[in-house]
Every structure is written in structure tokens, then in C-alpha cells.
Length: 113
Length: 113
Image (cartoon, rainbow over all chains, first blue to last red):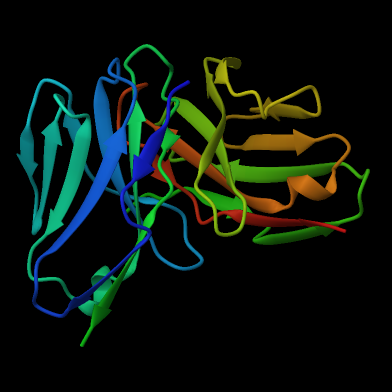
């Protein structure tokens, strides 16, 4: 069956440092991948996505890297701020599955001032 | 900025009772979703809905669950006879197309006693 997982359940960084959150996936048929941020008591919030035909995509302070050879996805957050503290989920999707996103387990990012 | 809204924020019910969770998706979106998240666990897909019918559903979405778009603005999830294991956060999401960004609501916390 398909699964999307994360390497580490928690990550603690100093304010101003860069953060890297990793994700492994098993479904090679995935067409795109999404990173979500979930703050306490809120729903998942879209951060950035990447199509399977790309290996890198940049947003504001965030970069997603995709390595299809090893089925690995990472989210890099530059100059991490206290407001970045949250649980981060990767999710995978296929163009033909009507928007059904399969989420990973989540990594809790804590930013220390 | 448009957002998905959900009511109630917290629903407490007795086992065996029916509950209806309500969502108002973003107004020009055509694709609607329900997910759930058991406390401390990952987000799980339940169902996607388009053009007044279910597009995709997971194994969790059994005969006890149903969805409806009763009018042009609401999208509901009904659980006919709740079980203890139905206790979770239920998130509604909507998107403009099947591969587009999904915007999540704040969730309804369902507690089954």
C-alpha cells in the first residue's frame, strides 16, 4: 500500500537558523507533493507544493527538494522564526485520484528564541 | 481573504447518536473534501466530492458516513451512529480544481462519549 512518512518526529532549532524537515514516500506514481503547516488548534495550511517532474521549487523563505531516485522530499526553511513553530506534514497526491491527499506522520518544529 | 469555515467548533455526543458537521467552502471552489485527525496522529482522507457526487473515498468512509451539499454554500458530513473511535478533529477543505491547492477549515472537534 502507499505510505508517506517522515524521518524524525521532532526538530528543535535556534531562531535564525535554517531548518530542514525530511519526508520519505513509497508511491512512485505520485504526481505532486505538498507541504502543510499545522499550528495548534488549526487546520493544515498549504506552504508549498512540487510536481513530480521537478526537483526543486522555491517560495518565500521555503524551498522544497524532491529526489525521486530515493523517494525523498525535504522542506527547507530559511532563517527560522518563532512563528514557524508548528507541525509540518508532507502529503502526496495523484492527478487522477480526485484530490485525495495522503499525509505523512508529521514533524514538530520548535524554534528556540 | 476567503476562508473555509466549519461549525460547530466542538461537538460532544453520545455513542450511537447521529451528528452532522457543517462546512462552508470557499465560494468559487468546486471540489470539497473531508479529512479527520485523531489526536496526535496524522491527517487522514475521508472523502472528496465534486458535481454533487462522491469522487473518491477511503476505507474509513463506510456506510455510517455520508456527505451532502444541501444548497449552494454548505457541505456536510453526517455520521449516522457514532462510535467511540469516531472521536477526532474533522477538517473540511475545498479547492478550485482537483489538483489545486486545498484550503482547510479550522476543524470540528468531535467527542463521542
